[in-house]
Amino acid sequence: MESAVKNNRYVAFFRGINVGGNKIVPMADLQHLFGTLGCENVKTLLNSGNVVFESAKARESDLTARIERAFQKKFGFESTIMVMDLLELRAMVAKDPFRGITSGPSTRFFVTFLRDTITSSLKLPYRSPKGDFRILKGSGRALFSVTLETYHTLDAMAFLEEHFGAGITTRNWNTIKKIAGL
Image 1 (cartoon, rainbow, N blue to C red):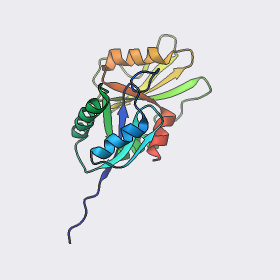
Image 2 (cartoon, rainbow, N blue to C red):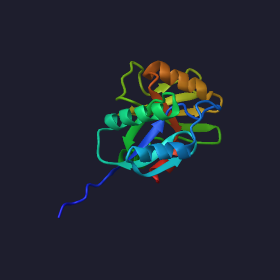
Image 3 (cartoon, one colour):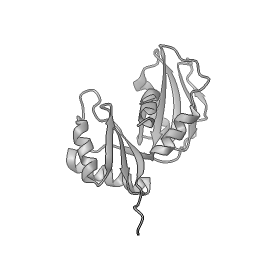
Image 4 (cartoon, rainbow, N blue to C red):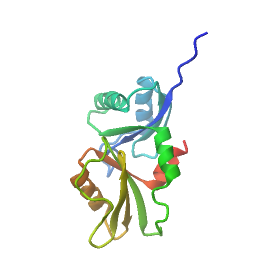
């Protein structure tokens, strides 16, 4: 008797969809797209392009390329997509890179995902001159940052793109914890 191949669980993060009324992608349509690619147990979270799915074990770069091609064909524009094993995301949450950081109503924790392993001449940890934006550390393909509400999120994203390239996408830490729980 042949044993069934078990699917791996992955998460895909889409960059720049459904932001400010631009590049609108209904999550039901995105979920359907993944189904047409042979993915199973597809779930989306929030409206910002977070997709958890099962697929036959594959290199993340191969999955990413396949999803990006299908996405562009279906929706008519490109979106940079980062795919990672859901177990890797759960391990990240378990390590809690923000442990020990005082949080309050004006504090925001973010994770920025890169397509490739971090390569930058920016020395980490980094602290902005006013102390209202910090990159705590980088690990693999992720950066962990903290902003105060006095530091505009768009400024943080521009800074990250300047130092780590445009092939990035950022999520709030609370969103990451929700995705890890799926």
